[in-house]
Length: 98
Image 1: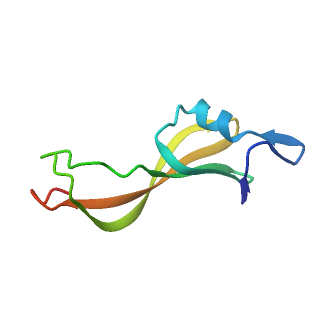
Image 2 (image 1 turned 45 degrees about the vertical axis):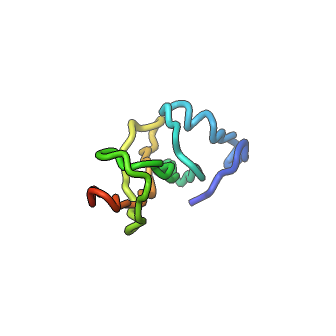
């Protein structure tokens, strides 16, 4: 598996990170990377931390465990495409909402 920075040539093809991200209209991810192997394209990133609780609006959120979520995207040519997002669970100190 290769971690491709912007515009790297592998096997005679130019892989453009921005073009792949634009193809799927992916925005709001931090630290994105695009990994390509013989069968699949993996887009990896992290979600931005929330500023406040979506339920009560409290700004004091406690960090909990981190999980990787995998979403299957439409194929690109003959390659499977997957979006892998690292998600940080948070607990509100006011309403205990996760």
